[in-house]
Image (cartoon, rainbow, N blue to C red; front, side, top):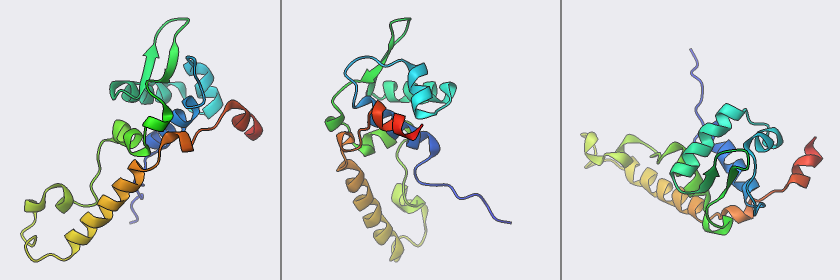
Length: 145
């Protein structure tokens, strides 16, 4: 029996990246219903993502008729890593990266140090991508319709 493959970047993280990239082009508050339509994300799912991003200090959310959301700081000050951590938390390559003492073979293992190095490089790559490099605007989305 084949199990479903789980990607490192979840659908929720993917949408969060798109949301932050979209908000990077905005200086004013954007309405969630407009964003849901533009980015083709179900509104309840979008609200869940917005709550996580707001909780982690990446966006400002104001309720009410004149409410909406916008980035709390410049897109150039938010990394791809920041968005992923805000939505999914930190993920390790394997259990040994998270808890080295969990394995009885840890002292002789040649696999864990390699995976730890890959994890470190991956994390640094994500930290090196500022969200201002990923910004897209309404006109870009309009071309897709």
